[in-house]
Image (cartoon, rainbow, N blue to C red):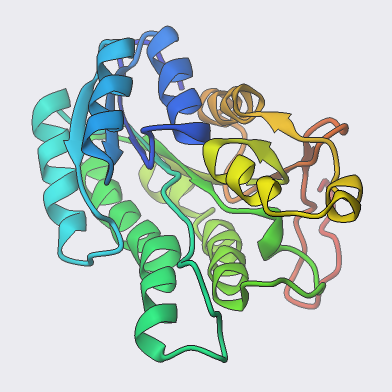
Length: 255
């Protein structure tokens, strides 16, 4: 898909990965809506790239449809959706916390992604096609332990949701892909690293600039051959596509 001239919605775009993605798409010629809970920072980011701002708390289920409606009205439609908004509560975490607390994490990291995608796909189908990129996390991959189980579970679900959305390319001209970043230099990760011990910091993989993820996102939007795929971005390594596997977990031919 040619990015120039397209209408792009980027959630969680006041800072970090979302801001870098919004700036990249704007630089490529897209009309961009910056969506964020932080109205002051989000409006500043939008103004800096010549975009529009939509304030929304996507952990509130009722906010998702109105956010899409507002963005579409400001941009004249939606051709691109980047589901970047995410995060977790301050803790404690599952199972040592009530369902209301871990449900908010699931609502932000999974429900909002599913509903925003569903509503955007309806618009894209009517318009003849589009592209969705989900920002998941390395926390959603593999079988290792993670300190925030509800966050890891939600991100794993986003990876799987992306994979099962692959047929939309043939049926509706809509490509859904995913990026799983490792440690990225964002305000959130800086706060996390500030709380770590020297030993914990030494064990971390290299930290990537947010612009690195933005380049990968733009590449997924532009590459019409990719659908239902997940790109893993780990510090110090080139991005790699996860292999496509059949239902028994065996790699499929050509993957």
